[in-house]
Length: 250
Image (cartoon, rainbow, N blue to C red; front, side, top):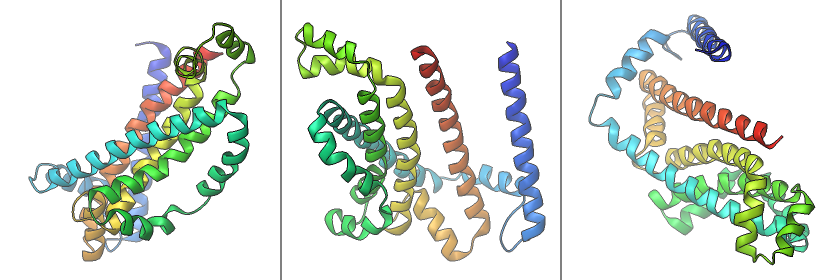
């Protein structure tokens, strides 16, 4: 193991230990009515994931999240490249994207329910609208910051729009686009879970909302822990890839 890998592993262990210690201290302060201690939560979570009733909820959430993320990335990239490459369209529509991005998305949920109804389509739509705009804005900025000489080279070679994106724009803008993907991943996950919490009959968000209604603290803590661990692990991997891409582009 290299020195850098050893330091990263040591820092991760120290961070986890500090988080567990803080969790235990917060439990001592809040008491049984609001929290459970780390060991009890880990035991309950281990039992929860072995039950047959848990896996349909997990499968529902992961399926909705995967589709929402794919839509967010595809629409965000298409919008970002279009506005980044076409200056007039960017001047008109980029302020609109920024304005929409500042709107609390929860206010749009009644509209989505009317448009898509209850169930999977509404969850996917609610997750996707959280991720599309960050991906689009980062892509716009990435394309805008591409060196003009690269674009001129593509025009000299008479590349069409698709060839220009595939051969020049996308490789040059990839580091910043990936940063947008990383942000879009987190926001799409949040949006999908919020969609499940308010109007769904399956999924981790629904399970969490049911536990809140029944004041089942053990289930609340277990589902929250699973979501935090999943988000933290994937975000750490994406951050490592993001940093490597930016180092290569320097």
